[in-house]
Amino acid sequence: MKSAALILVLHILFLESKTQTCVAGKVYQDSIYFGADSRTTRYMFYGSRIDTTPEVTCKIHCIKNIYFSNIHSLADHSFLIAKKVCEDQIGVKNVITVFEKEFIRQTLPILEKYKIQNPSYYESLINDSILCQTIFFGFEESLPYMISVLFRARQLLTGQINLKAEAHDGILFIGGEVREIDTLFSNEALWNQGPVSAIDKLIGIEINSHPKEVSYPIDIIKLTKSEKIWIRRKQMCE
Image (tube, rainbow, N blue to C red; front, side, top):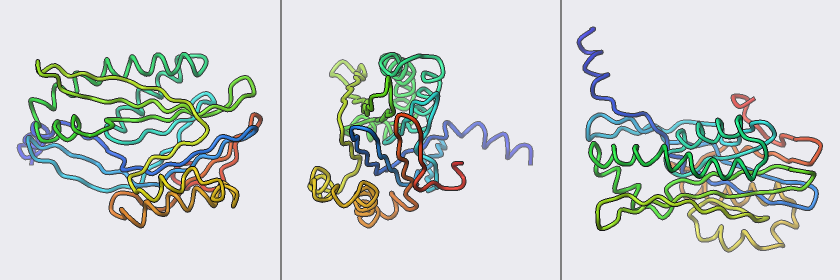
């Protein structure tokens, strides 16, 4: 028994998650609405073999009144970095700046490791249009904000890995892969039905299109400068 356990430990490289997430958020003058699905995929590495397991997870987090959601690959990794940065920094501008630097610093060695130990997984990360994305949102000085920080990784001809960050602020954000979502997302008629209804519909389209990768329940939060209201939240996330 001890021998078998030892062999298992030696062959497991990494436990990571990838959230095939659909999130949707909108900023109003005096409020923010943000919703996320609940599916994540756990990756267990045994040498060059990868086992995957779907799980239910919490995707809307809050540290010191800064809310964030991590999507795409390396979700656990980006969550831990965002959590630590939010704990240590004051002000969303500082959080974004330090988060970008820390993610790049801590992620490059991980990519280099995957390049050697699991080339197929490494290729999937490098070839993805977005490696990882974190959306920060909340209120600062009574003003609402929503900022998406995304990272793109590429391998240069020299073999060196190039990892860059892009930050975009806006009033509408969606994360999903179904074309219908992109068409509906900026349609004001959809949002005029109410932000909760709009978020449910957008994420529901993604769930119906990719039921093995995106799933119910949908968590939705409303923020104002003075309070947070969980319109819907899984009990495990409380």
